[in-house]
Image 1 (spheres, helix red, strand yellow):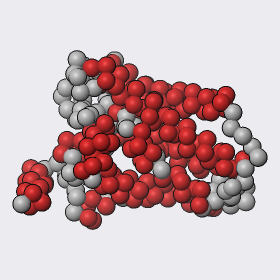
Image 2 (cartoon, rainbow, N blue to C red):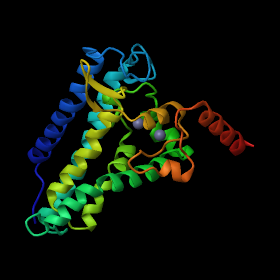
Image 3 (tube, protein in one colour):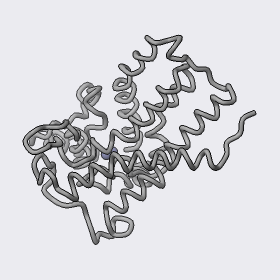
Image 4 (cartoon, rainbow, N blue to C red):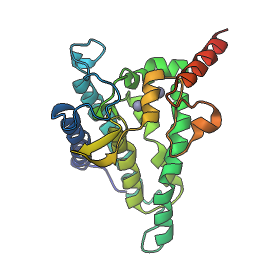
Length: 259
Ligand SMILES: [Zn+2]
Ligand SMILES: [Zn+2]
């Protein structure tokens, strides 16, 4: 039987922390410290909170970094180690790229579908009053979000949110797919929470970064549980498109559920 050594786990934890710093840290420096594009395409015209008791260390960015690393990277490392440990002990099967190249690319194409469905339903679960009050609130304290807000979540939320790669414990895949899946789950939120709709280099758009759909979720809470890769919000009636009509609709719905 293969065993896990502390050095091995520490190495993966440090590698994952470095990756998060590379993505969330660079985005934060570019957009919020250097302010390379000013307020262009910024969702909310205000700074990340400082001297605010809602956040650890009274500072939103330090608070978000703390939860992202202590909770987000720890859970990420935990799932990765669990997968590699299970693999080393032959508790799970693999479908190597060399033998199943088509399946490898099919997984890549299916990522938006798997993540879109998984995120919508676990997110609705997280809005159950008990889970919201004790768990999901850690993430929702961020109304004005930044790159470090992405996986700034309570450990239980990170355990639930990062669980979509568990599918590879059941369906054999190439281990590279599992690593990519975990990286997408943990690093993509740095872009979707960046606080900016587009990232620019002078007048040229580098990429569409943030997710207006999810930004509205941080603003209104009871809508837009999923993402637009998989428009479950539209199909299941929880969509908010940013218009006043949608806000009215949401208010009416809330009133009905209270009365
Ligand atoms: Zn969020
Ligand atoms: Zn939420």
